[in-house]
Length: 301
Length: 83
Figure 1 (cartoon, rainbow over the protein chains, first blue to last red):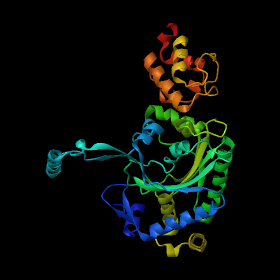
Figure 2: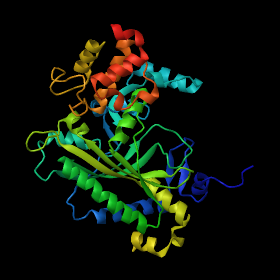
Figure 3: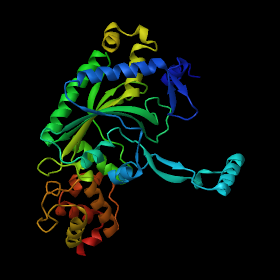
Figure 4: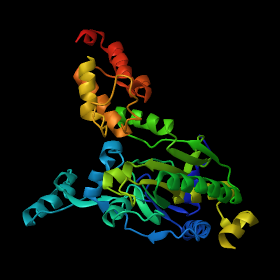
């Protein structure tokens, strides 16, 4: 029998994660949340002079947004839609009876207009399009949201509900690519100062199916996605940040235009906040009071 | 076969100028075909020629031009060469 508890078991035993009985769905301790808050504050400090528009959305988008964005084309396996009971008294009685007898009651649930947010930046694109052509300088946003992906796993780095902090740039191709380069350098400096080992590698999104295979290769061929990977709970290092260049994908999907009417380009840097917190606990210990002075100074100084 | 391929490119590649401007060797990506469109084109080719592209062919090179597509389809469905 393997006597070494998994990293997930260690995080649960330390009280940082509270199991719910569903893989990938956990409560968080005060200390875990404090690490995330302090990390986010460090990120905010780095970007403080950039003039980002700060926006926070609830962890949901409209079902229409999920349909229009093409999410169901690319990632149907990850999407979460919200369903509710919409019947009358008779249906209610049947519902309770089914629950009571252990029958499947979910078949009678009806799709609402709400879906769970798959990535923090999703609500921005239709909003930008509705607000008219971009100014010459483009736009820059700071968003953060809980995101949902249906991929139950016992890997603590693969939660079903997790937070993603993002800076999102919209503008000309040069503006977006400069933004991405800037954040790659900033991230290397920040993660280095947090004394975490990392690498920046070409990556792809988990596109679905055979068509997805082609999308993955195409994304890699064009260098559209880079990830900063850090070893956490597995032999393979975990992607904790990503640097994405969407070209004009979201802009043409939603109609986000430059001042001259051409489709804008967009890109984002995403911080996987739970993964970064997990990386810090993994490398520096389960009690933050024992973390290296430099790391403590950066986060709590 | 090439005529059918050009027809499918016109329908699915999403080229801003349609397929009328392209030759067999035009780089479809440079002409404006997006990744999503290339996937639609791939699926349409599979249906039209009753073929299935193996994983090693699901890359940008296979769908770069009408002639590259013709070569790939010819490999998978030799009978269609005459069609």
